[in-house]
Amino acid sequence: MKKLIIALLLTGSAVLQAAQYSEAEINALMSKSEGDLVAWLQQEGKSHTEITKYYLNAAEQTHMLHQYSVAKVLYKKALQRKDLQDKMLAYLPLLSMNVQAENWPEASRLYQEAEAYLKANPKLLTKDTQERLTIFKMQIAKKPSSQQERESVEFPHNTQMVFWHDLKQYLVNKNYEQAFKMIEGQDYSGKDINLQILADIIYTGAKKPRPSLYCKKDYDLYSDSHESSYSMKLCGVLLGIQAGKKISEKEFSELKNLIKLRYPENLYLEQVARDLATRK
Image 1 (cartoon, rainbow, N blue to C red):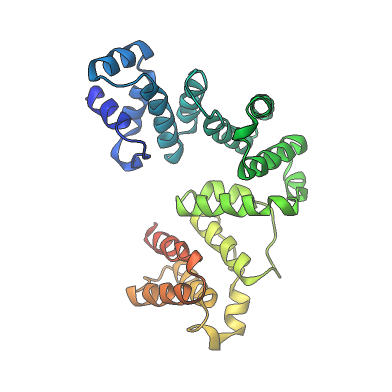
Image 2: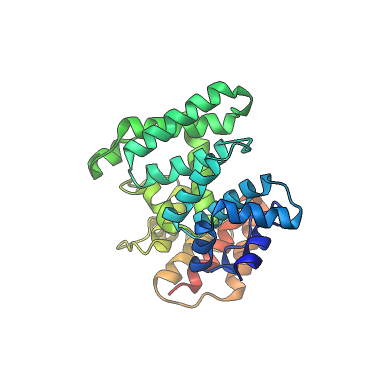
């Protein structure tokens, strides 16, 4: 069984589907010695670089499954490989996990390593990587130790794109707890309706109930827009979920069509709404 799992992990470069492997199987892969992997690869006639792909794929797999302690070990194994061509593939997720866990000493150490690595390998410094590192640097410097301090942390304008990109990825991957950590303590009353709905989605997914959804005020005020505005339609779906109602396929179809008509880049929200409606 272990050899079969290793073979599957080492075949191709695509990230594997998280549902295919149990935590026990992935942990077994993590604990397999590199010597055994080398022997197996030689037997299969594969390059030694496949070991690095194995570590990265397994790390990303466990990261997606929210098995962060396992993912950290696997990413660190990948970092130790001399044939890893871009160490930022490991540094960035390691930084993210340690910042989210508020492990500031480790986050600071990783940031310094990543910064030194990029200075030695400037061609690997992309705009996206720089923006992410800017966020990490700011968060490490702030080191918010209380909820009040967390609320005071403001993101510079040039990092907003990265912030919302990461938030979207958490929603797409149904990682509502991590998304909640990104907005925790912020008040969205009086904010743009689309921001309010995102907050409502996150609160609902993370099972952090509020007395009333942020979007309800506008939903009640603009009753004539319930069937013509995707934000109002989505708010109605969220209100139905909050009330324990079953959302019909017709409602999801109408929501999808409204989003597709004006904001196709937000189609993921229809899938997120479906997921929330099926959660218990």
